[in-house]
Length: 410
Length: 127
Ligand SMILES: Cc1ncc(COP(=O)(O)O)c(C=O)c1O
Image (cartoon, rainbow over all chains, first blue to last red; front, side, top):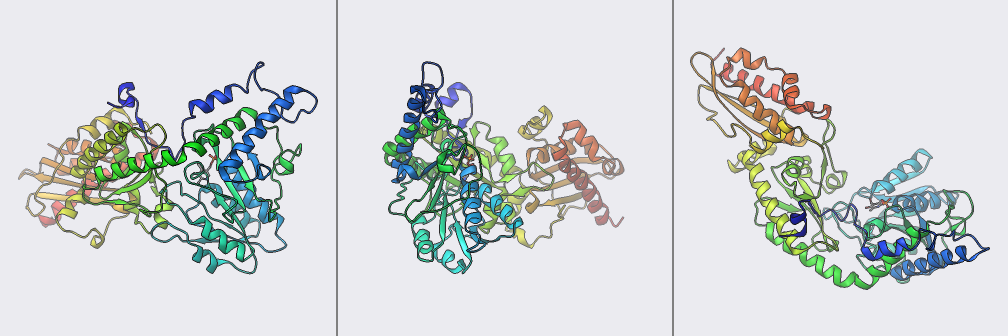
């Protein structure tokens, strides 16, 4: 029996949504809160409370820089990847607007990128939203074809948060650098899980988030390249912290948490990655004999612990209802009268029904083989039960092509 | 999303799941909804010579509320005359299952399904 089963709580398989804080991270954070800890303001220059706090945040800056193989002076603290994305995209677009007002991104970016681009469109910028290939990947060639004279910025993510596929950011970086375009990467899902090397990769800006890598929520960072130097227009004005790029008193405990999370990831990434990949493969081999089950997105280029699967002829929300013992997320949000299938799955070319029948499983540091076995067992049971109930499954088994039916859309 | 106890009961123990012979003279079939919208209901009724529904079966692709709405409907229509069955209102289903506003469309679909099944039966009989 797994631990979750003993405690009678659902097994947590939603690590792409957020991760629990690693106990080692929590311990480091606790040291930075109360009177006997490092509670000072890192900007206080006149006493040792401030000096100690500054030492702690600068130590964390070094830990994050090491994880990215970057210079600590290239790390800017933010409140998370959403803010990092906003700062990078708006900051570059505004700063370089005399050079041009064209931005390139992909249709399956996180909303923090897409909605920021929409805002820039309202301000008069032009944005190209690239359609990924059927594997969910945006390639260097696609970028190369889309770059124009007036393009200032490309923003294409590393690992996708819904389907877990991983783009060739080194390749995209080469194209951008050769064409004199700044390249921003949303790496919220890949930092600490996949190797990142800012010295080797031609990435100019990179967003990270602590709560996706066993750190606390509400803290993140933006990597901003110094050589060649990338300039940004600040979005948050005030005391001039973070070299004027992001004002606001540094959240010592949060920053220390992110630093410790980065340190642990740097040490354990490889072993953990291999373990998670083995769990993912074990999970898939335990369910792939169910008929009409499909993996969404590339099989080869993906995060070690993430899998998005469509179960044809059953609907996602009812599937989730049957999987109360699992904490997972579905590809459709049936919360309004007009059911909205995921824009990511749609962009991959999935039809609405397949998008509605998809589930995202993501494994992480505290996932055990027992958890995965329980998930596979529950999924099999739920799919069988719901197909028993499904008129579409009936028709499929009778050899009826569902595309030939005229449905009464409502 | 929190479901009412009645929805959960119907979802976990759906009543009258199955299929009747659609080609039979005394069976009416109603299929409504669309896979792209996330729900499809197939409701079938078997009608005796007195015009009373003596059996009903359903299969539904959709969320828990859609499954519960159609399961409940099969219970309600059994023993009813065709006109009575066709007069069942979505609001009665929604109320019985305590559906939240975002799930009202599931009860509308169930009302459409029984109306379609009755219509299909009557067309077969040349009524
Ligand atoms: C790819 C990606 N970008 C950005 C974000 C937003 O990160 P945060 O929650 O730190 O603002 C997330 C997580 O939700 C994400 O998965």
